[in-house]
Length: 97
Image (tube, rainbow, N blue to C red; front, side, top):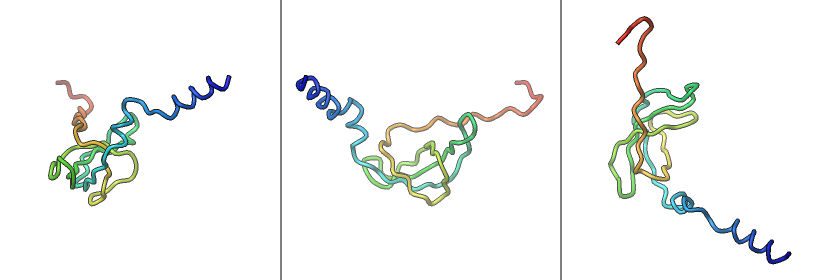
């Protein structure tokens, strides 16, 4: 029985495939402007930020942020390859396109 418990503990200690990405280097980015609100209830804010360090230094990109945010704040990004999709514009009432 001790051997099975030891195997279970070894499995818990080893990380999954995606854990290497999470543990990689963290890159700071400064919020330039707030683009708008998104999410089912509007709880997510889409911002435009400028990457400060790393291989994508100087790149301006869109990111989704949860929680209070304002221009000038610094975000710590786990990765800089993926950019958020643009927010779709809403159609006003009664307008058919």
